[in-house]
Picture (cartoon, rainbow, N blue to C red):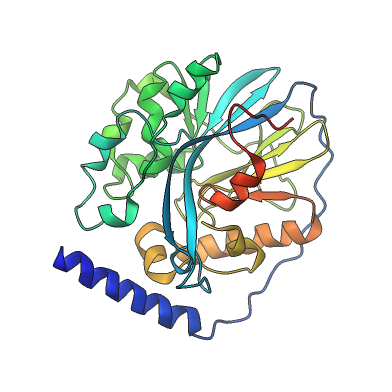
Length: 308
């Protein structure tokens, strides 16, 4: 307990210094207008909130307050398209307590969660069939926890992210979450060509309504999901590119010490974040949805509510 208290004091001190240390003026690249999308009738999504937590805002982005709390969610994004249903990330699953026990002791207080409601139970209650595939924004433990709850779903990752899984270790990658038959893996390439200023993309259905875009840095194969709804509204689910929407709108880096632990390449993550900020500048009606920002997600709503 004493070691944890000392670590917490050090983190608070580091956050205080980091939040007041002069930062270089970010060079935001010019964004481009999003291409037209032919979103079909029936395309919709719902946020499945599987757990939550509280932390200090200062721990979510550089410049955040040391005196204000921020809500942290663990979600899965359920997408229904006439051509199929999938989850973008899985949220926390039914085996998360056992998985969490494999995380190093020093890290657990900072990764704790509450109000566990795994997606599999919520889908069953809502009479929604299990998804055919789970596309991971990245393979960190809190995004891959529920893969075992959907044993018939393909697990989609890029080859770079699969290598990260094969070589990763706690606290960021928990190998026990990936103990399933190898045929469940589906390795894909971002092979649909340039899109909205990104050099690569993958158009999942060929109509521009659901496009995967590269957001490297947090992990080597991190991706975001850009959804274009029939209403014309567009949502960009950016995974852990930023933990708080203020990270993109600021723009602000993540809290330095946390970034050094969880971001494989903080500078590459920052470059990707600035690109997303440029895209937002060029498309101000675009909804940016970080994977853990409770305030943004509360405004959207959760299953059984749908956005369509």
